[in-house]
Length: 103
Image 1 (tube, one colour):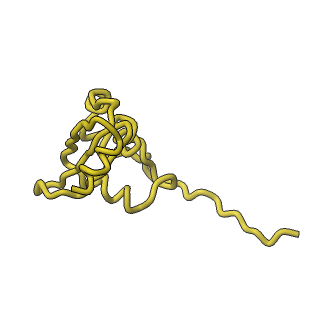
Image 2: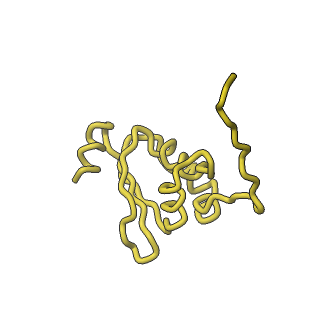
């Protein structure tokens, strides 16, 4: 006999709308290159909130756009609520992107 309990998913009062989808729209995300690179996200005061690297910039940044509660960490959900600007730099390889991210 199992003592394991399952908890039902909490119902939301309002449908979740990802802030990045609302701020930037689908065309912005389609314009991101499918190249290795570094990206950085800025807040309202142009302060750097996050710097990351990606093998494929479009896929990586789309992962933030598609982030949902119950599937994504609260840390990431808090981050995407604060993002006002997203920049990226294309790199010739993932290794170069890794070095650039650390710079």
